[in-house]
Image 1 (cartoon, rainbow, N blue to C red):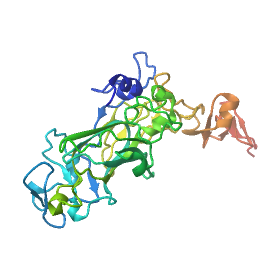
Image 2 (image 1 turned 60 degrees about the vertical axis):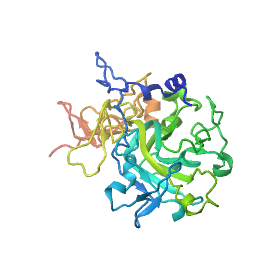
Image 3 (image 1 turned 180 degrees about the horizontal axis):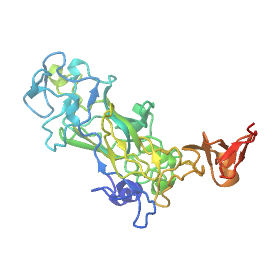
Length: 387
């Protein structure tokens, strides 16, 4: 079970300001400060891809565990269809809409794996996830994530009554603080592996609970990347059964399938502490939001400094420092610069100006180009006399 006090400690800024966004990324004196976007469910309304869904090749019969009557799944009948998008359509405690796989009779049984994939289109800082099942909760399943669009799938969490034999992982159920040398290691828990309840069972996953270093999140780049996800995959590995699938005939096989009514993610639009709002730009072709960046930052996730603000290295904002990007000193002769580590170590200012205008040159456009001299008006003029 989750420990509320520990979670509050572990999640630091992730849990701050749940009900609304910070009004400004600057205080009343104009000093920059860390700011957060609205706490939300980015999975809500997102399309879901499933590798298997019941009723797609024709009507199929299923018999819910614990019920006497059987029912029909038919993708062509709106009243009896259970597409994957139903897990993100809305939160419904009663599970009136749900996704459902084929049954064991149609061949959905270990080692066949069923995947549900949700592309969030953008990076989010994930606090928790919750799955609610219409069927009995699985015996074994895994959650994977992509940190950024185009990145590889990374294990996020495993659930299994046989952690070691199924996933090669130690069972860490019941531990408040998990001992590991890798803060970004995916753990395995067995505590939700009981077949009961037959319906409406819930499985939560907290990204930081029990994880070493979580109470120093602001200073842990590894954990900051760990909570970042742009896509989620639920990989259903093995069903829970009453043990009658090998001798109970077709009726028993029709009783076993996967069904999920709701999938919820608690998260913030990832802006690295440099924005308090995400928005959908006008005329944008892609269907994802971007951060409304402040602190002289830019990019989809405020992950870089603006072209003329690279006087020190970019860094995410934290409670201890907003890490505002600083303007390069180009003496009004350039519109962009890049960060030069050697220059930074030597002078304390790392901005090297690019494309200096008006015949100027130097890291800060502070001198005249070769064969040019400073004239009486302060501008660089040709050193070659005009005949």
